[in-house]
Image (cartoon, rainbow, N blue to C red):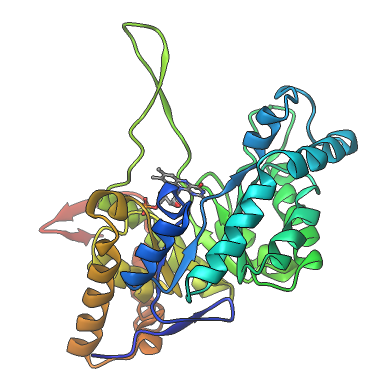
Length: 326
Ligand SMILES: Cc1cc2nc3c(=O)[nH]c(=O)nc-3n(C[C@H](O)[C@H](O)[C@H](O)COP(=O)(O)O)c2cc1C
């Protein structure tokens, strides 16, 4: 079987398949199962800024980007929950031999800087910043909103030496620009994309209800386009995280330039064996194509430039027999 080991943000991975941050990676039992199934790395369930804010009794509506909030929140972090998270990091590093990537959900502000250092001291091999700052306020411009990402990355990457990845949602306007700026600001990895919690309005009860939030394979295709666009424009390591429900999709992400792929929904549906299924499928494909993982990564961009232009096409023209007619 071909070697499927790889490098992601300077970390050596036995496989490009990473167990994504989710409730399946929130305890040692889950992490061990992911490792046994062959995960190249594990990303711990995020520690949520919001969670700590609520637990601490801080008013969720208060202006939480002020210095005052930062200090209060930092104090809250030390008292509620965040200490347990550091313990989880320590135990995880001691329990599994694959790289452990901690994950923090940041809505903004500098207060994660101190905490990121604690995560590094607890032994994490990397840190994924799950930044979910969404500008619901009409007074915030897209530029202002996106500059929050750069501020967080600037502060955190100056505080720690471990590699830092940024996980963004699909709502970013200029993803390749964002990737290039995040990279030059200090991020080594970019995870495309997060799935945000969604609500629907129940038209009978007139109440909000959470929507079932697992992905489908079809959702990968829009993301493959962005993976290809970013990998053409930036040297940042890309981790693809949407709709990996088969080895075929994982391979498509790699061909588009992803260094690693992450699985969450497939693990929920099939159990941790989803990881071994993905590893096996990737290895078999490489074997059949007589290709190394390095050769496969980004191949679609190197092979024919026209293929890339097709990926950039966003409007339907005519589709007959599955091929686009100009
Ligand atoms: C139940 C559940 C919990 C999740 N929790 C987190 C989380 O704490 N932090 C995070 O960054 N992403 C979280 N995610 C998002 C996943 O890591 C992943 O990015 C997303 O589900 C897309 O990948 P998929 O198509 O393989 O599901 C969660 C996803 C699910 C389904």
